[in-house]
Image (tube, rainbow, N blue to C red):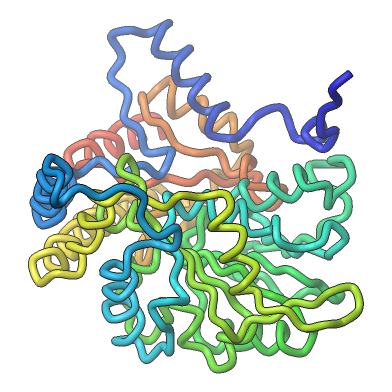
Length: 406
């Protein structure tokens, strides 16, 4: 008799975005003539930058000839892309990150979910709330939690984000081993200062903990006083792993390319207290379970760092931020308290009531899809998230519809 991993049965009924998709599908079936504007899931809507398309086509042409064909590539990614990332994303910010500390992958979601595999099951994990569900669910699957009680899993240390602290959680009140942080934050759009991140790095060093830092939305940071990488913080190389993605910046959600930075200074320990390089562990896991991203996709990603690519990506980000500012301004004009939308593509809105009820009202009366905050954790109840990933025309139409509902 084959037995299942019983931890999967602890998971709440289904993944948040699956729930949303089911509700939207049912509404569309019942209202086939109703135009729906999707501002819920954070999927981009603009085409890939022209520089990336040209590089993509050229790489595909290479695959058509025996002399230029590429088979299996390095599991960690081709050197041309890893070097472009180190030079383009980290060197200008004063971050000491080498190309061989960068691991190319098919998504930050995959990496942030998979990274916990290299640690013991009995570690103590700190999770922010509201939270990107993948951080929680993958640790539930791994058996690090008890059952869900009152919307939270026993065994996890929850870091509350709320209006009082600007959705920047305080340090844990008890020792923890693994800490998930995301800035600019998904879902709240909150951003952390260098001083705030320094506190987390200092805490991790003092407690021999590790920070998993999700920086998938760093390109949206426009305020130069704010950090775009955890490695802008003193000491972070010793205690932090960073996840980044080309999905939201260059539109690679359907193309799939991201990367994880694992500095060689990061250390974990055996049960006997022996120090082990996390870089070596992740490299072993990566080479065992992953065959890297296709050559044409990596060439397209490399083009992001060309002169034309940089300009085109900057224009994409600016367009989405224009949407974000408009959404925030319109919601605030209607009397709603908001954060985000300035250095983030997400606007976190106090719905003044039940999250799912607000979701249903916007869908039913305005044809607008948002994301209920309750799906991101206990502290998300009473809020909704609106995404800026759409055309400005659709955003204008959505805000007009919301105004009429209001």
